[in-house]
Length: 91
Image (cartoon, rainbow, N blue to C red; front, side):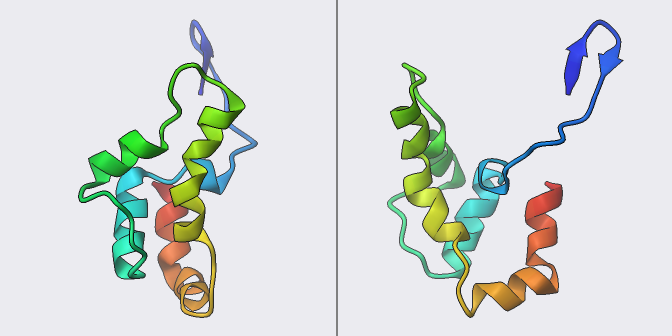
C-alpha cells in the first residue's frame, strides 16, 4: 500500500473473496468441476472486474461467478485446511 511520497503502510482490512487472482479462481473452478462460461482466466477476469459506471450493482456482478467457486463444501473444506487456502491467501 502506498500513501504518498516515501510513506508506506499495510492493508489491515482485506476480504478474501475480493483478493483472489482470476487464474486461481479459474483453476479452482476446473478442479471442482464448476461450470463457468469462460475458457481462459483472462475471460473470467474481464467478467468479474467492475465496469463503469462504478456502482454497487456493477461491483456485485463479479460475485455471481466468484462465490460459487469459493463457497465451501465437504470436498473443498479439507483441501483448504490441507494447504489450498495458503495459495489463495498469499498470492
